[in-house]
Length: 132
Image 1 (cartoon, rainbow, N blue to C red):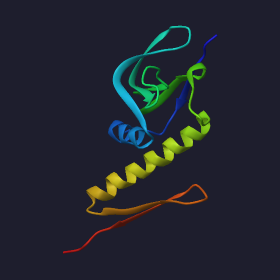
Image 2 (image 1 turned 45 degrees about the vertical axis):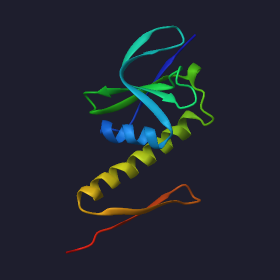
Image 3 (image 1 turned 90 degrees about the horizontal axis):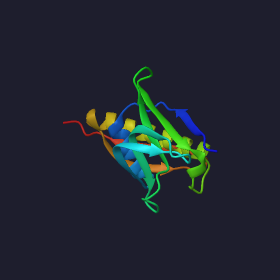
Image 4 (image 1 turned 180 degrees about the vertical axis):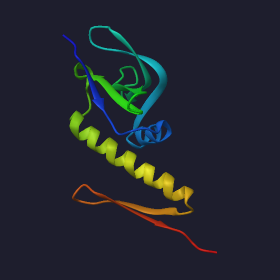
């Protein structure tokens, strides 16, 4: 029997979410239906696929108007990534946060110089801005 899991996120900007999914090597379609293992259909704002298996969606994102963020919905029966859902969520949030910072610093006139993935799992971002 199938069970649809709903996981709340702190993700609110769909364009940054799309960029983050691409950075993770995932593809997506907008405004689609997500089917669980029991063939129940759910409307999702983004339907996400692995680049390796474009025929079977991994999960979807639904915008929650009350919380003003996106909820990840998935049927664990279909989870086929080599990493756990918890680890994936950590990486998704970390990369989303990095992309939010890059977007904001770029709009403030800074340019990203480098991003370093440290051994402890943290990331270091170096930006610069030249004054006129």
